[in-house]
Image (cartoon, rainbow, N blue to C red; front, side, top):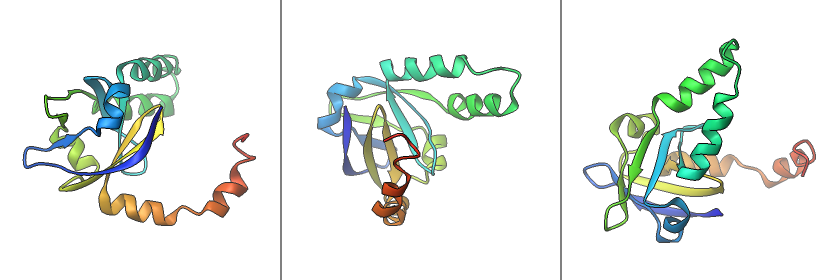
Length: 141
């Protein structure tokens, strides 16, 4: 399971280190795409296949479904770690997530989220444990 929060810096080429604790779950090759809330999503090959299967099942006749599929697939790219555990984030994805120097990688179970550090800190500050607790029943937890 992908869990934890890790701070790393992008190098001048746009490479980011995959935290060593996450490498075995992510594998040497994985998919990175635009995510929600201003971050990127990173999926292992197996999790990407599961996600892609769900996308394929969406009705082509539904405009929202088409937009959803476009959003996730248009920017998706396969990344590969080098011998130092670094992977290149393409410039279009760095722009989409406002990644410049400092990044936060967050494990959220089935995927990773890659955040601009300032954006993550703001997002994290806005999360209220009380609000989450109140909404847990709505989510069936």
